[in-house]
Amino acid sequence: MSQFEQILENNNLHHILPTLNKLGIHSFASLINYTSSDLKDLGVDDLADRIKLLKLIKENNITNIFSDDKIIVCVRKRPIDDEEDDAVDVDDNNIIVNEPKLKVDLQSYTEKHFFTFDKVFEKFNTNDQVYARALNPIVKHVIEGGCGSIIAYGQTGTGKTYTMMEEKSGIIYQALSEISHHKPIGVITFCEIYMGNIYDLINKREKIILREVDGTVHLTNSTSLEFKSFDDICKIINRGLNFRRTGITGANSKSSRSHAVLIVTFDRRKSNALNGLNSLIFVDLAGSERGTDRKSSSNETKNEGAEINKSLLALKECIRGIEQDKKHLPFRQSKLTQILKNSFIGESKTCIIATISPTYDNIEHTLNTLRYASRIKDFKNPTPRSIHKEPSNMSIINDFSPSNSDMISSSSLLFSPKFNLSNDTLLHEHSFSERKKVN
Image 1 (cartoon, helix red, strand yellow):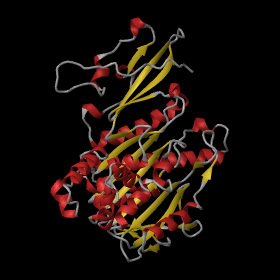
Image 2 (cartoon, rainbow, N blue to C red):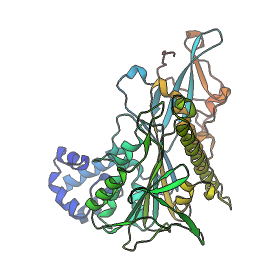
Image 3 (cartoon, helix red, strand yellow):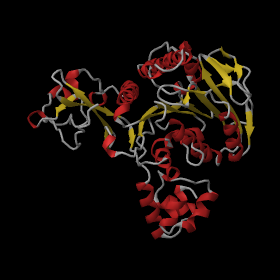
Image 4 (cartoon, helix red, strand yellow):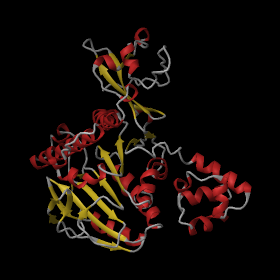
């Protein structure tokens, strides 16, 4: 039983499930814009049922504020067992990273780093909630014939693959299940990008040749498999996952060392051309550990890391160019950006989900991930409230001693989530407990 069905069951609305299922409605995200009159037209005749259902829709969705956004940037915080080891606070869509440091005289203090995103998911949020609250505009866009992309980025072990590909609740499966109720037939291409080359995960890792003809990218010898049901989709994805390349790094014993790219086109015709129509692209980016975490690993692993970082830089530069309306976009800098070209031009929508670990040991990686995601956010919305660059005079530094605990500069507040641009006064709320753990 899905979470959607469970919630309806718990609220004595199980009797309306057959009606909703018959119409291809399997999540609250599908009902986000429905009124009481709309629900009545669907066949929910009882007024009390409609009132109850509307309340559940509101509780399990956010207002569709992203409907006009071309790029949505979200962050997901991974759960941890030890609350004392949690260095990351979340306040609505704001993230505060509490980094313990030592002064020259060995006195401890905390440097606070502030970030704001379109949506932040806490450690208790489920895959169902991530799907309902962030991906609804993209799924709806694809159902209407557009192109959508969902990209997961972050350090290995922070939940990228779980968020994307968990067998029962991964957002890939939820999105494709939703769309397949409207468009049950299409083709799938599943590949990975490793060390600057593209390999076919459907056809035993055969090397794919990428060509661009008249502005359209072609995966010339790729294998595309047709599906006629959601079950077919699941079988094809599982087949490809068996060939995904992993490796050992200093940070993880089974790290994804390649970018996995799943291209689902809701069209009967098989084609190796990526034309950006009627399609949904999922990208599970390789683990973003830096070189310091590969000190115990081989030169091959370090070269992998360099290639991964090169493609991530190219991706960022393309997004920067798009948001700044540049005439020339550097898509050819990497195979990743060439494949994603149509995801960023024309009538396309993209959601980037950055996953982070809140533990003190991973603060450096968490900050790297958040800075990367924040820069993408800044490209799409370059206003003072969303800029979170971090030279020393723009971070809140709280000393553990009482006399210095409230020390704060106006420049740091200007870029803090608590700064209200509509008031002359600076608003700062000490709503987050300081962490006294020092490495």
